[in-house]
Image (tube, rainbow over all chains, first blue to last red; front, top):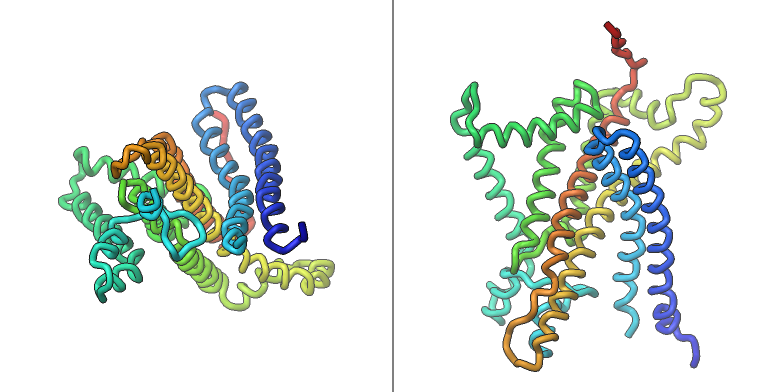
Amino acid sequence: MDMTFQTALSIFLPLSLGIAAFGSAMGLGKAVSGAMEATARQPEASAKILTSMLIGCAFIEALTIYALIVVFTLSAKIG
Amino acid sequence: MNAAAATHETSHSAHLEVTSWVQLLARATAPSAFSDFLTQWEKVIFSAILVALISFLAIFVSKGLKLIPDRRQTFAEILIGGLDEVVCGIISAKGRKYTPFLGSLFIYIFVSNMFGLIPLQNSIMAFITTTAPIAVFVFLYVQWTGIKENGILGYLYHLCGSPKDIVSWCLVVLMLPLHILGEFIKPVSLSFRLYGNIMAGHVLLAVFMMLGVQMLAPLHIPAGVPLHFPFLFLEMLVGTIQAFVFTLLSTVYIAMMLPHEHEEHETVTLN
């Protein structure tokens, strides 16, 4: 099996998306755990904490979405 | 099954896309000038319908404003007051004059995302050709605000990192390209964040729709199991959050451009 660029793309595109998902999962886990600890300390502020957590999660998620866009753009080149 | 699969794919993009009624109409009036017009201007048609809807709602709500509001006026006041709070919370009290722009951004993106979830419709924010102009416009508005508030020299001074002592002045050579690059990166990230989130959500919906259609393929009826139903709620959440994040980030960029005087800390007296 010789390595054409299509083979290389087929191997590395899903792999790169998996790595991006792994990184964002770790980041999101830290963010959500911080939000849960804060809510446990002060339950009456839970609405504000929820809003801030959602905004933070949107930022972290955006980096994974960039990887997804690259996958969509390049996946047309696999034959 | 091929015909069913074809209803969910378009030939223009590399990924699956949900068909919309404009595309169906274009396919029905197949080789005609009207059909070409429809395919080319599909997103503009959606956008025009959205703008008309938002304008009618705004006019309907603001007719006959009373001092003691009734239900319809209260709903509008809650919405606009909430947006005003978000903007003024970040830009301090003089953010009031930026609320119309930022508030309309939020309303436009939010309504277009919600509209994309109605069956047989597509959200116009799922295409980079829609989100990029909005992000570019926000970028131009932020630069214009910087020039208007600081003056052209103050704007360049701010771009150099506001050097005050000899060390900062020596670092201007480094700070100026960094700040200029940073200013250009902001609309790129804004547009791609919104585009990626909404497009990924719609591809998810399209894949599950196709799965649902293929499940009933042996029956040879043009129907499918609505497997994508739970993901509609995820899409509603994501659409709202992305509209909010877009507006919030635009507000933060405007706030960073405004002159930071030495903040007058409102002293809170504990009585």
